[in-house]
Every structure is written in C-alpha cells, then in structure tokens.
Length: 94
Image (cartoon, rainbow, N blue to C red; front, top):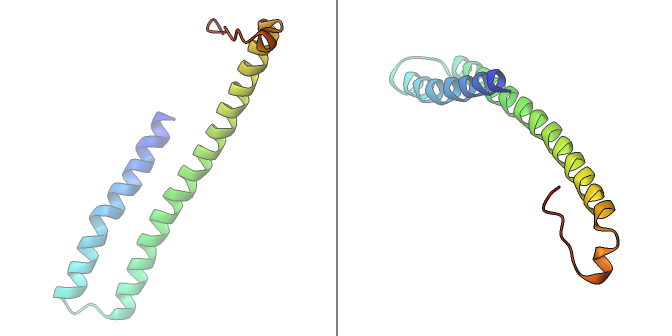
C-alpha cells in the first residue's frame, strides 16, 4: 500500500503543480483556446485516474475492515456466554 500511496501522491502533486502552470501559460502567452482545453483535459484525466484508484482502494479496505469487525463481534458474542442478557458485556480480550 505504501508504494501505491506514493504513486497517488505523485499524481496529486503533478496535478497541483501543472494546473497553475497551464493557466499562467494560457494567460500570459499566445496559446490557443483549443490547445489549452486539450492540455487541461489531460490534467483532468490524471486527477480522475488518481481519484478512481484511491476510491477503489478505500472501497476494498472498507470491506476488509467491515468483515474483520463482524468477525470480532461474533467472536465476542460467542465468548460472552449470555452476558448480553445479564448486562455484563466484557470482551476486552478480543
């Protein structure tokens, strides 16, 4: 996950640096509007790709965490031996 995180950070940094550079180039030089839109769409593709990958990774991580939490809860309920009916919920050792 660490390597992927560094790639995602690189994508965010690239987008963050190149967007103001592109806007400044358009504002202070004779770049045509069509060329500006093409370059800006490439930057949008970069940030969109980064967001899709990050969303996919977080979605998968959420499912894994939910499954682990569900398993731990079931294990605690088995260890409680009816403790829920008596009001003594003690499963700190799980």
